Length: 150
Image (cartoon, rainbow, N blue to C red; front, side):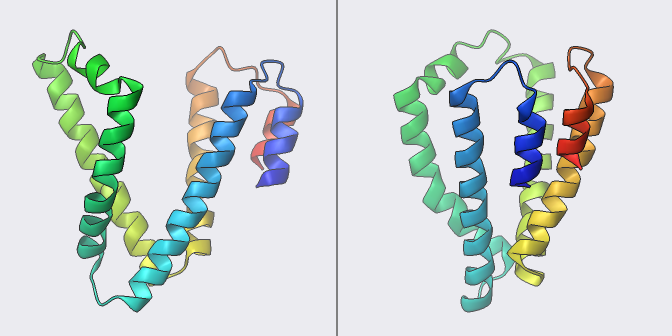
């Protein structure tokens, strides 16, 4: 995975250190998250919904503090389409899909292993990247990008 990222990024002319640092932090956080789910799922006598509830209770205050400090709450409140029915339908649909995704991640990780979930996540990422290459014309597809995905 790391080798693929290096190969894909080798020809990236729009290098941004902050972006690469955020992706690296995301990868570390995901690995810790999956390892924690796997260990807790085996040690604690909770089902996946209980684990998800505890995760939400622990993470919500942290997320709210970060959102307040960064100004995201003010930005969200000032969003001009906040009261639009169309936006609210899309938001609720997005929340439902996020719930289903989190539940399948918890289920897969607790039934199998963190490694299995990582492999499944990488396969999903390959599919998303291929769809992105086909859908968005501003992406420069070259040999390094293709080799980095594989």
